[in-house]
Image (cartoon, rainbow, N blue to C red; front, side, top):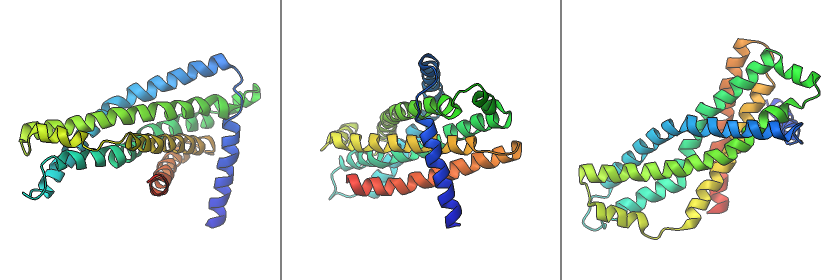
Length: 247
């Protein structure tokens, strides 16, 4: 088991070396990079906004329910909700959400190209398929997913505000006061740093499992599942490590 894991990790490192090589044509690379950024950003905005609104609403309601006490100031609801949303919920939950959405799509796309021998055709033409196909996706995800995280934070905080305004569990003034209390820019830096690392892991691992596929449609489905599981597991482990280092 350990030997197999080390062998796969070695293949992954060799794959990364192939990915981060000089593109054959910069004009084609830039065109694919812009296309991937548009597809990842616009294609994921709806689901990110819906999940973030719901997540912000739920965390605000749960926080307000748990701290109903005359000894605790009302603005604590906004403070706790903001801290939870910015530092943990949006970076981690949205990244795991995008692993299932974008990661499976990347694995399926590259895996289908391997099955239909399109990758072999690129190799015959003297083009490095790893760099040509994967590098634009990796760079696009590292840029787009942190931007989606920022939008996610905004939608989640807005969802919390709507919940307070509709349910009137606390005054909107106290909620906004809690959102702005002791705000640190470092919290946002921490969240975006985690998101960038998670985006890199998601895109490279998903591409790796699609690139190394051997077989047909059945193996493609297994590779997509393996890519999602492995990416999610690594993200959860790195979440603990990064939190320990940065905080």
